[in-house]
Image 1 (tube, helix red, strand yellow):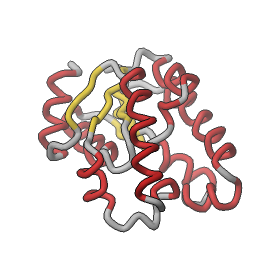
Image 2 (cartoon, one colour; image 1 turned 90 degrees about the vertical axis):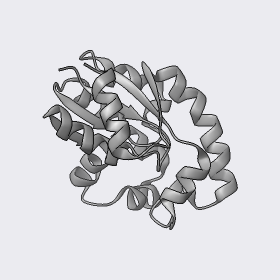
Image 3 (cartoon, one colour; image 1 turned 60 degrees about the vertical axis):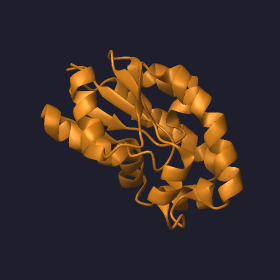
Length: 164
């Protein structure tokens, strides 16, 4: 199986849907933010605070390069990862297919709730502007687009059927 790479805004459900989809497909689940945190020994929020966004984006690109060399994985990418062409190219290297979980902003806000762990979601208005800006990039990167407002189980089942 070629990798299924999930992209979308923070709170779109990439991790929850990804874990469910990996279970259905009987394959490995990989979360790019979790890989970065494990390697760095600190949270994404702490990396942003200590080193800035540019440093984090370089770490993220290195992980996307590694993911491109993997097979038989469902991959959850960070909210900004596939807004950069170099990362889209990297994750697709092994023939991976990119799926955009297109969740609406109100649903995302409900899911995020307390945004204290989300560095780019501290100001709701700025977050919504970022959401609008990134959405076009997700659409450009995607091989498939799916409604991200559905339950994780329903979304995963639909993806399992789409990505045979």
